[in-house]
Length: 129
Image (cartoon, rainbow, N blue to C red; front, side):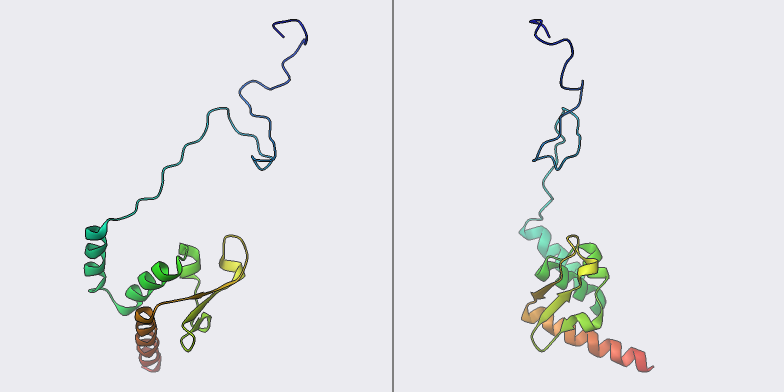
């Protein structure tokens, strides 16, 4: 435009022209910065675990499963008892609860397996009452 080769600017003012990397969506010229997630240090983890010891078995199990299998909040809250296989120490995450709509089977640790057994026994006792 300044050199007289074009009469109009081919790039809209304040808009980025979508390409392959942007997923076809328009975005502003100013980049959106995202911070990394907060990761607790060793002392902070010990504090979390100390508090978790005083929680009911259900809460301790949820914390252990979330940590072992890196579950998202929706995946954790949507678990059913038939999604847990104590014999093989695996957890089935159903496709309808995942972010990418793909089902996956995840292992969990032996210590979490103890919590699974405790929780299932606790649940069986309370359902009969």
